Image: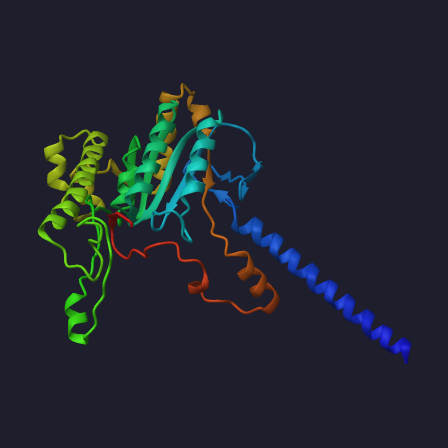
Length: 345
């Protein structure tokens, strides 16, 4: 009887060990897949087939570039809402990547591949300034617009030397927004409810749902928007070599088709990503003093942020096989459904 019990106990321990090993292997693969930059497969161009290298960042630890160390252009993807962090965008990762590329002697340029409705003022401007610093190191920046590159995303693209767009791109939306704010005082009165806030300073509580905006507060908020708008317009005017007045006419918040944007001088060309890469190689031959053969051999390497779910969620899903809804993850910020360059409070 004791032997039977021991066998059952031993079998249970072995089963537990197997489960733990499977979980650890699953998590290890998940880290490599989710935390860094991973791209496999061929990178086609009209010149010849080129294989993409694999670039992997895990947290703050860089495993390096597993490719030949020839000259290359980084295809740097900016996808989704621009803010501190979300499932498609991470500001720290992006800034660290730009800095790494700036310090890499083999890197000769960045091709921004943008598909974004815009986002927050601070992060968009921080990225723009980081790209300007990169460009001051004597390297090229080009941009390629996919389905949308509007508002804050267009702001970032103003760091580029040349802008290409897909023929179905929506771009522009040059403007700034704060809000919406909600004044719920009328509803509270109807419900017989009273909310009270205590603040030191007559404007400290503005934008609270229980405080109607005064005329003075409206001017304060509009002043914030107008100052940031002027900065936006000035950057576009400088980048596109237009006067401030000419740019302001275009910067009324509307979105433009690719053709409209080109006709108004907001982009340079309409075409495919491969077209942009070929023209960028031609430009690199001049700016980097490369022969035509050397320019033709320049690789385009993908750098793309890949979201990794929280650790405990991955453990739960790996051990149970149950997929949890994304709503259970940390809330990162506003889920923007329209082109926007906005202040986030």
